[in-house]
Amino acid sequence: MVGGGLAYLQTGDMVRLDLNAGTLNALVSDAEWQARKDAWVAPVLENQTPWEEIYRSTVGQLAQGGCIELATKYQRVANKLPRDNH
Image (spheres, rainbow, N blue to C red):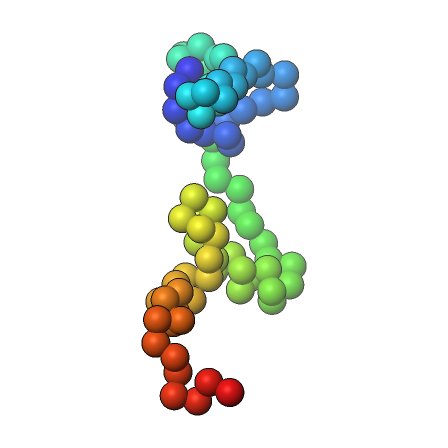
């Protein structure tokens, strides 16, 4: 099976890791994979601390750098020093 979907993996599933190609594939039939996708329900995430809520609401995906989204506009601040930089 090619594609994403770590949420559909189950304990005991076989996977194929190809380091040269940079892929990780579940060795599950297409019919079984589709059945898992159809049955999947997103978990309800409940924040237990204010910091957890802030993190979940402001930090982007790891594939895009895992940055606080608001902070990304300041990534190139070193190109121009602030007026009061002391």
